[in-house]
Length: 251
Length: 195
Image (cartoon, rainbow over all chains, first blue to last red; front, side):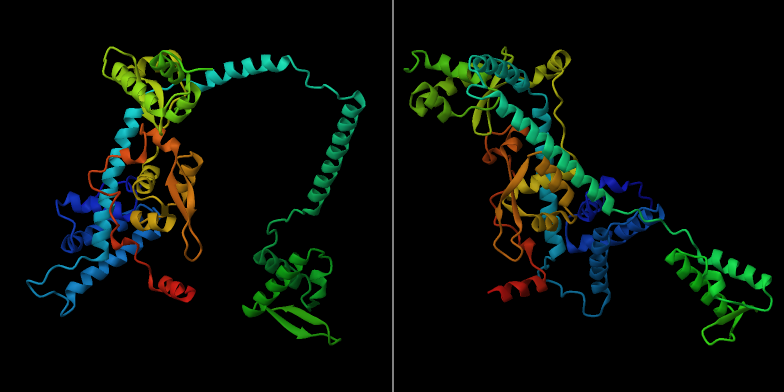
C-alpha cells in the first residue's frame, strides 16, 4: 500500500492515527487501533526511507500500538465474549484529540471571518493625538529653572560614562581568545614519524620529533601517532644509552 | 459638566472615535449616567447599525467593549484603498495549541502536550509573543508549572466579546475532563513525598 503523505501535514502521532482510522472508515476503538497499527508502522518506515527524522513522539506511539497488537497474540489475551470493552488510555486520548481538532476548525472559521473585518486604524489616530499633545506642550517651557552649567555637567557626566563603558567592553573582549580548530591529524603525524625512520635507519630519539613543536596539541597528536605506529607494528622502540631516552626504529 | 441630552448620539460619538473597544463603565463615567442607560443606548445603536444591511459599518462587541468596524463584505475594497497592515493567520500547530488553551484554560504545558501528543513549547512561545495567551497563574504542584489562559487580543482576533461566546457544540469547555492527565507513577511518588 502506498501512502503519499507528507510528514508536516500531521500535527503529531495522534493526528496521524485519527487520519488512518478515518481513512479506513472505522470508529475510534481498540479494535480499530489494531487494524491500523500496521499502516501506522508502514508510514513510519516510509518516513525513514525518505530520510526524514522520525520524531520520538511517533516512535513512542508505535510502541504502544505494537503492545496492543501483541496482547491479542498472547494466549488469554483475548477478552471473553460479552464482557464490556475496556477503553484504553490511548482510545480516550484519541477521542479527546478528535474533539480538539473539531474546535480548532471552529476557531479557524472564526478567524477567517474576522480577518476581513477592520476596525479604525489606530496608528493614524495616535499620530494626530500626539500632534495635539505636542501643541499643548509647546506652551510650557520644558527647561524652566535649569541653568546652562547644569546641562553642561550632565553632558560631561554622560561622556565620561560612555568612555568608561567602552573601556570595559574592550577589556571584556580581550579576555576572549580564539580557539583554533583541529589542525593536526594522527595520520599526518604517523607519516612524519615514518619519514624520520627512513632518514635515520639506525634509530632516533623521540625527542627529535617533538623538539621543535610548541603547540601542546601538536605534541599530544605526535605522541598518539607514535603509539598508533607501535600498535600496528610499523616501528620498533628500544631504550637508548640513557634511561630516559626512547629510540625509535623503522619496523 | 453634565450629562448629554442626546445620550445615544453621545455614545455613538464615543465609540466612533475609539480605536480600542470602549466598555460601558468607561462611557458611563464620561457621560455621568447610569451604566444601564449606556447599555440601552448601545442596544439601540446595535439595531440601527447591525440590522440595516445597507450600512457599511457595524457595532461590534469585542473583548468586553464596543467598537465600530467595517462589514466583512467590504473587506476587499478596504484592502485596495487603505492597504491596512494585513492580519496574519495563525499556523495550524499554534491554532491547535490555542484551541486547547481556549477551551481548557487555565492549563499547563504538560497537559497541552498530553492532549496533542507532541511538544508544545514552540507554539506556546509564538502565542505568548503574539499576545494571544499569557501566564495566568501557577499550579501548586512540584515545579509550580505555568498556567496559560487567553488574552483580550485573542478575543479581538476571533471577533469575540468574551470567552463564553466560543462555540462549543461538544461541551469541551465545561467538562470536568477525561482522566487524560493521568500521571506517570514516578510523578505520583513525588507528590506523595511532598505531603
